[in-house]
Length: 203
Image (tube, rainbow, N blue to C red; front, side, top):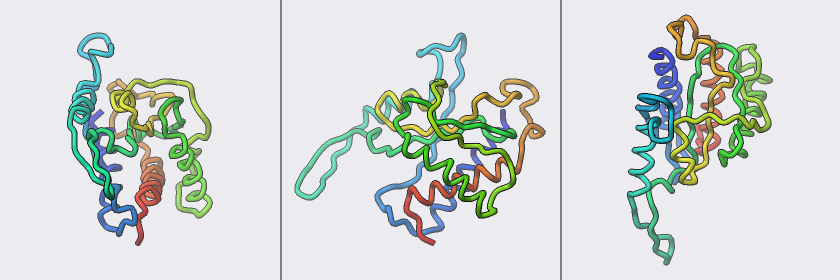
C-alpha cells in the first residue's frame, strides 16, 4: 500500500511540476493536489463509516462561502463549486490496468480524451508497447471511493482506477515487486498531456 501511495504522489507531483514550468493560457484554472486520508471503514463499510477525510473536506468546502464579481454583477457561492473536475488517481502502478469511464460521474467528455491521447502518444512512439489502458465507452460498475462526497455536491469526477482491481490489492504482496515501471511511465505521459490540454499550457 505504501508503495502504491508513493506512485500516486509521484504522478501528481510530475503533473504539478509540469504546470508550474509552463505558461498557462487558462489563467483562471489552477491545479490543486489533495491528499485524503481515512478512506477505509473501522467496521463494515457504510456511508457513515468510510471516506472520513473526503467527507470532511467536501463538507468544509460546501460550508465555506465566498463573494465574487463579474462585470457589474455580484454573487455569492461556496468553495466546492469552484472545482472544475475532481481527478481521483487510485490503485495505479500494477501491470495491465484497464481504466473505464464509470456511469454517472459527469465528466464523459473529459474521459473520452484519455483513450485518444493514449493512442496518439502510442502512434508517435512516445509510449512503451503495452496493452491499452484507457478503454472508450461507459462502464456501469460503481466504485465507492473518495470522489463520492464531491460528486454528491455536483462536482464532475474523473475516477482513474483499474477494474478489476490489481490482484495484489489488500494483500501482503502489494509491494514494489508488484509495480510495472513501463506502465507507470505510460500513465505519466498520458496524464501530463491531458493536464497540458486542460490547463492550456504553452511551452
